[in-house]
Each structure stands twice: as structure tokens, then as C-alpha cells.
Length: 128
Image 1: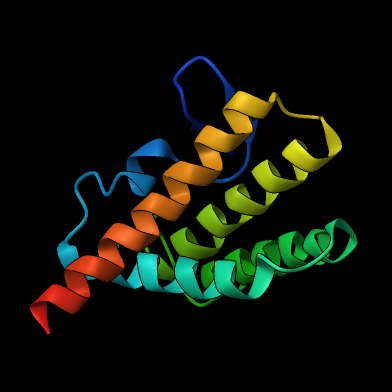
Image 2: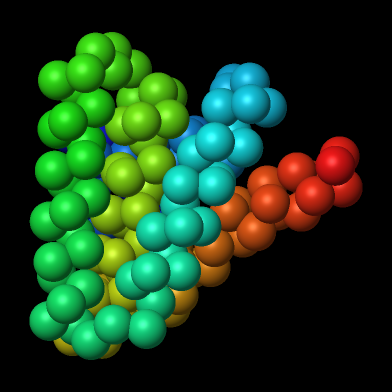
């Protein structure tokens, strides 16, 4: 299990890496696919209650497991990375809502993930 960190001294335990979120050493196509999947997930999860958001966390974990079963061998595989980062978004939002995560750090994590997804979407649209 990796530690998703933003900023570097504060972490939320999830199965993701800061480098994936930032698109470090990922081909543009992989970044775009991860961002698209995250955007779709957030669009579905944003309006739900905390109780239902916990279910979204479970679904993201199940998707990660399915990706491994389907042959994902790296945390940079979009089939695994997208639900992992989506799980991080949900965990940060739940941590913010329940007070289990410092407000400032939770907002930084949520904003970083949403920014990544939005920037990639903007790049896709500008190329079209």
C-alpha cells in the first residue's frame, strides 16, 4: 500500500501515489484516461451523502481489485490508478465531513484531484 500525500508531510492512507496524480512519467494518453475516469466518478459521487459515499469507496476498491485480476501490473495502469485516485478523493471528502482529517489537508487533496481531472479534460477539449 502506498501513501497518497499532499502536502508531503500529511497523508491519507489509500492505494495511490502522488506521482500518479501529478501525471509523473505517464504518457498523455494514460493521463487523459485516468482523468476521464476520475471525472466520471466524481460527477456521480459529488452529490451523495456520507453514507452513500462510503459505498463509493467500496466500489473504487472493488474496481482496483478487478483491475489486478484483469492483469494490471502497475499503479500507473489507468484501470487501477483511476479508482485508486477516486478512492483518495472519497476518503478525503469523508475525512473532511467527519473531522477525521484536518480540514486544510482534506481540501488540498480534494482540490488537487479535481484540478488534475479538470486540467486533463481541458487539454482533451483543446485538442479536439
